Image (cartoon, rainbow, N blue to C red; front, side, top):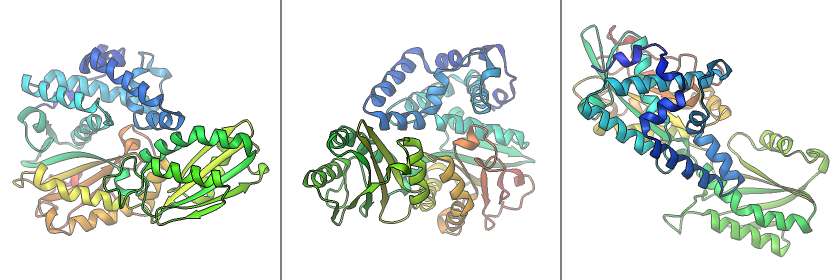
Length: 408
């Protein structure tokens, strides 16, 4: 049972947590990852901002040192998770260490992040705190599920999964940042001959993707760039098509007094939390864009669809199963809104009522705000949103109660 790593105190090996983590993943792999992120960030200011947000964990780790009192609570929490990950690796078998190394390498490639690794470690930690013995079955035994819980003679399986909120957005954030960087130089040139503060309102019924898989039904960042540049070149103030409705309006200079952040706040208040915003500032003025999809985001529904795929692949069906979901690519406002509207609760209950959830006794949902130990209102009060399946035979077992009782 690989549980002892979760109980080890903050020890000398974490005096420099960055060095401890780099030793875990390998110096060459870590250096390659940092170079890759730097190259992506160099694509433009909006992409750089997206990189800082999505890959915040890697960037925070790279800046860590041993001077713990100077760190924020979230950083100190990350250091604790690094300690747990390093200690876990040390108590695994040779095969388990190889699987852990493969997991880490996969999370340092492409658009992946380290969040799923720490989600696994934190999920195990939570269950230990609740009185369960935790076995890392995925790493130790190559089981399809990640963790095996034991308490009072009862066992349960946990499958940890991570998904992006972009799966529920027609206008994806990654595509929006790519588009904003594509437009930056074009808008700088346009502002040079059109001084003032301008607002381009965009409604995108077909959504927005970086690359179209079905050219007839998807609208790409390059296509939208061409449409806007054409409209501006013609001096048009409005242009509508099935894929994009665009309207260019002037904004009073006093609305923001040249302050980009103030303008973004103004636009957020007007267009709401689901809008995609960006501002280009030039010597002669500012050009803001505010975009919305043709329908509301359906992040909760995307989570439900993802959960429906997991039981056949990740749970054996021989024990009660728990799905531990981590939702990535959400900001504080959106995460609060999802919880406040009970959207995740409604979609999870819908999933649990279906035949595909027969082996699932409970579902938990978290974000980075819980992962990094943030407090209310940014994070859920119990460290996760947890929903019990009342139809499962094990739902009322006292031994499982700390892991399955609904938190709402």
